[in-house]
Image (tube, rainbow, N blue to C red; front, top):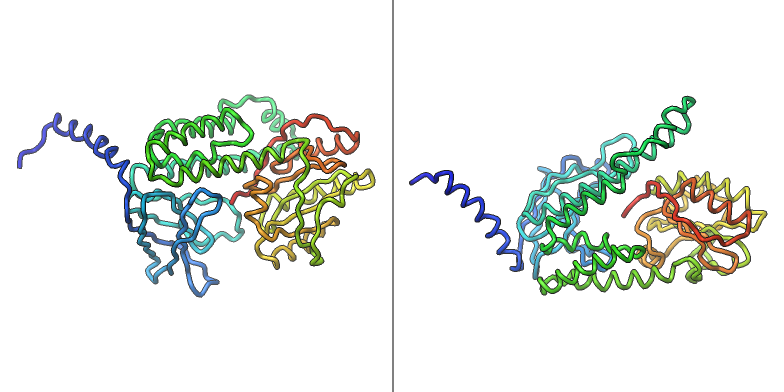
Amino acid sequence: MRKAGRTGILLAMLAAPAALFAQVGKPVKSITVKGTVEFTDPNAAVQKVWLSKDNFSGKPVIVDSTVVGKDNTFTFKIKQDHQGVYMINAMYWDHATFWSDADVSVAMRGYDTAKYKVKVPHYNYVEGSYDNNFINMMVLNNELNYRRLIDEYNMEYYAKKATDTTWAAYMKNTKKYNPMREDYQIREETLIRSFIDRPVLVYALRGMASTESTQKYDKAMKLLEGLIARYPWLTEAQKLKQTIITNRAQAMKLKTGEPMPSVKYPSAQGTQEGLEKYKGKYLLVDFWASWCGPCRQAIPKVKELYSAYKDKGFEVVSISIDTDKNAWQKAMKEENMPWEQLLSDNKDKTMEQFQFSGIPTMYLVDREGKILERFTGYSEEAEAKVKDIVSKGTKAEPKKAASVPMTGF
């Protein structure tokens, strides 16, 4: 056989991407998913792995499950009309996401062996196609951003507690070359530009279509319309468009000055309770869960607010999105919150109705039952805003509170 010269090798390299791109418009009907789990749950008799498909309506659908073998391996066979986004859930501890246009494999850590278990995402690289790497890089960008958020929050917290104020002054006054949010957005924008004509781009557009930013919303919808036109078989893009439109319409109902939605949830005493009875008072509605670390870290601060301002017409209601009632009851007993406790009877519906994907999320409601402010996480700025409004009894135009670490889903 004749060996190819350098020119031949170069031509082959240049031809490869063209061949690769030529396959984009052709739906892939079936793939094999192979994986390994390094650590299994010592407390579980059966080690299960679930496979879900993201239909972009807001909640992935479980399509298959299997048991991890004695050799710590698992396999799925996917039959599909076309490629899409799938998620692997190993024993409710570890997760991986991939694009199903080719066979994939992943080595997962599995069960968390740490002595103290914290909901910090563990990154799993999924071996697969060129398009699958878009999801690999998007997931990594999200997880690194979340970890940096935790690091910066902790540094700021301990710097303020230090007796030597040099550290705190440096953090407050030194301009960062790339602030965390800008750094994340630069990386995201580069990834999107690199895959802008690929069907897998649909994975990024849900997060881009902010209900708050018209510019981001318009850009995301334009990209989505392009995918729908280019790939008619990509039903997820069509579904996502409708989901975004629905979410935006709901978000408009939660703007400042709009009435707080009328809802009723089971109370700790088993009765159905709503929020209308708090009219005439300022109300802080706190969405939380027993497993959410930042939620429980915020509770002592909310207690201080409640104690200081309850005689001035300030009330608090906590609405848990726990799906484990026993865990909710245990957390309530441990936290001993002196205000009304409610439990959502449909977590997904509650998250959709109040437009949040992470907790704690808090709404401050005025005496007429209208929304004054929404806080993503609990911060000093949020606390100051509540104190100012309640103490002065004013309805000043709210400023966006700084975000703090929150637990995602």
